[in-house]
Image (cartoon, rainbow, N blue to C red):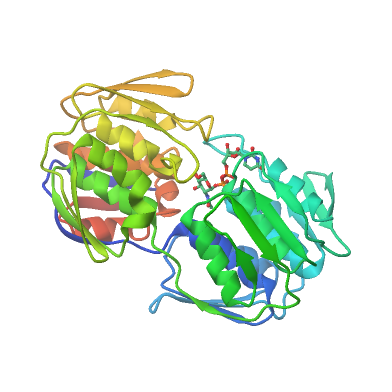
Length: 419
Ligand code: UD1
């Protein structure tokens, strides 16, 4: 187990580069097995979750070569044979379940262990299964495993009760090699869905409407290999904007665009933060007094749940009362306990957090309870004078590539320590 020791209270300065999006590359890596050619993914982020999904493919006998020096992943599913995904790999990362759609699409069957809930919520898979069943799949749950098969997948219209990101991705991948036309109504509209569609269309797929609530997939017979660079990580970028604000620093954040960040920056603007776009860079000057705001997490293009904990840290230091309503995950306030340990004044009423601003955090030893909770604690620790420790940082390594090196470039004092 490792922990971060952070000496906070310093003013940060300089540039920070945003990596490719974790939530883009995971489904894209799963989609590579839709063909039996080599796919090349450039600029892949060195993240624990990326290692896990690569291990998932290796366990299916897919050839995966990761060149960490040039950040290039080469994946070839030609010799793939196993269609069983172990419990261990699903337990390590829920997103491993994304191989279900491609396996079914290419091989007509799969056996994948059921993902359980996780720290932030129950996270059922009913929408994934309902959608695949509408395409003609037979599904049974045996000894905790989803056994799925279809002689032939046939295009259909699927209405998602909720615009689930993972269900939309699994359905797109399953429908790509199905016969005829599939329509996904009330689909998720996240930028990462658009990226997946661009990737599959590059392989020869025929997907229209990604990024809207109605996605139309015309099934094709075969796909070929493709080269792709995933989009940038909008949640990582948003975390660094919050970092500039909470440390009252001026930081340049590189490799982003305005479009994908809009739901996040509109809340920063409402607080009074100054953000200047300059091509693919943004410059944030955090040296301003911020105003309290009200936030409600929603599916895209609403405010993303993955930025909720980071805003919670920032709002904890804003004079006045702010509120956050979490509508996506039922248990995503675990960071509140840790932020309270650091002196935050937050009350929880079911899914509503009421945050009364305090002058500063108090350096403490706290625990990262999940990925974005860990990011929120890094922000809190960097904002306050003195030494804090964050334990269980394997959660942070799942989604922030080389975070301590990036932060050190900004003059932050952060060290990784083996416990
Ligand atoms: C993805 C993201 C995650 C983000 C989340 C919401 C990846 C790898 N992860 O997760 O970072 O926080 O979107 O933006 O891209 N649900 C059901 N039944 C289902 C599927 C989902 O009820 O079959 C519910 C979930 O329990 C949750 C809500 O729908 O309450 C949203 O989940 P979903 O959009 O599926 O999130 P993920 O794809 O798991």
